[in-house]
Image 1 (cartoon, rainbow, N blue to C red):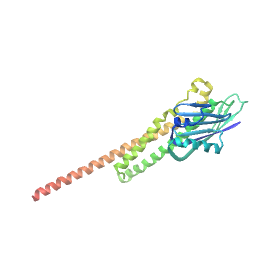
Image 2 (cartoon, rainbow, N blue to C red; image 1 turned 180 degrees about the vertical axis):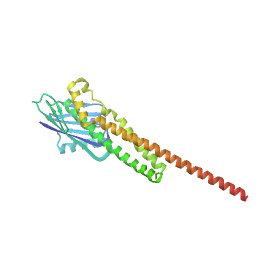
Image 3 (cartoon, helix red, strand yellow; image 1 turned 120 degrees about the vertical axis):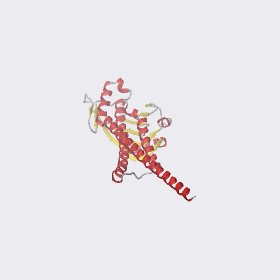
Length: 258
């Protein structure tokens, strides 16, 4: 049997608690940050508060129906339409689990194992979102660096620079707030097979290297912003010095005429 896993980055946040109040409490696992529900024998839905919804074995129509239920509880929708697909194969004749690039093979259907798989696909699509955002930030700072290289100055007002700094800090805070997405679920501490599955999936999706890359890009942007701020402060100081010189000169000239 094959199962299709689809993770969708719907928004920057989802109010999981608010959503849960509208859903039947049967066959569900809930915490303040995530909602996991076993729909029927081989259908599952997983909603995480960092804006990701994951479906297992849903048709396109069923996905759309659930997304409509979630949308009233989303915060800051995104238009990137990021989604990641993965396949689960249940092979009873196989004694060991296998994790490959696009498929994981399980010897039996287990809700806990499916949840681990869905969680890792969710982490992967969430990291893709942050990779795109930080990539755009790095590209935009390169424009200012080229201005410094070619003109010896940057063409940006202090107000716009402060807005840009605010944008960078907002991204960083969002990532820091969601650092727990890299944490291992509690179930892996109690089950050796789930722990092995989780580690193999994290390695397959390159979760930690990708997170470190996002963090490195943010550090580059922050360092560049410090430089830009210093350049603008020097520019502002120079302007004030010239204003003072002009005022003193004007005062001297007026004293001479008096």
